[in-house]
Length: 382
Image (cartoon, rainbow, N blue to C red; front, side, top):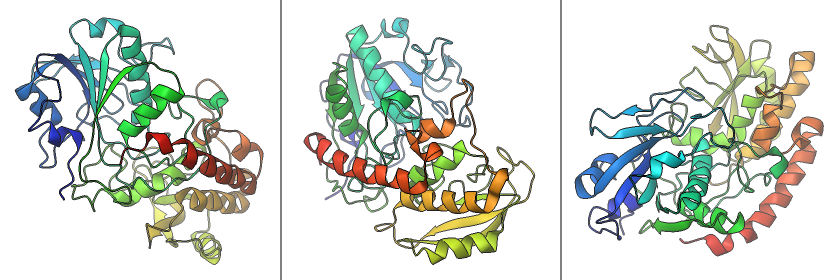
């Protein structure tokens, strides 16, 4: 049976959208299976009134953390409202502003997630649902396949003391849910109270990866260039909270991990001796063109996935972090965000990783995984 995302099903059914004034949150990854933009589909078949741009913008041409402006889309002539950093007020940031709801009845979202808590499109989902609840508007999720499957769960559940735009809800690093399922989970578990509708996927089984479901890979954001990066991201993204490069500025972000002072051969030998499932660590050298260590020669490892059905990316990354800290000594440091919070605490959803040991954090992960597998069960659709 062919797998169809929500937007593909809208090509032949209207799901109650006819006669409604629509707004759409999307980016370049909002595509049909034949790679037609969701913007074009909705603009042609329905009454599309406004577009909303999350992190990276609606065309995906803005780097992580880059400013997203409000402007007019040249192709459609529709207004594009920024929902990434659109106010200095933290409560209003990263969500549709109240006045943007005047011309719409429903707000839709169609964007490719990667199934990871700190991927900011999930926070956009959460905040937009809150905004719709406040404005009395219907929120519609055009559901999409989780590209790294909907079966695997790994990581600790976020402690709400460390809630931020890179971790907004009480789910693990890798939650194994679709955006539609996650919306249902947040709506009830966080008492958002949004009038929520989900246009579901057809033909998908939870164990399927995106390529097994027949979808072309389109980078959902500039630094997730392939499915291996997406698989590793729930683990290796934690290096964003450290002085060590996570491979941004290379062709293999989140696969290459390193720093100028590391001994690549020794690090790879240490990691391969741990015999972690589904991954081999290759000594590697790289020269970032931007981000950390721009123009500096870095040494470290590349993580090569040998079996994506057995790899535990969070476990692999925490073991790698432990080995790098052991080799780095005083050269290692945690990075702080603009408000003097440690960024690693926001990514990890706890300060145990920073204050405790790798073992302490991995024990927290085991507890969180067991708890979340049960907690998510009522919200699984597929």
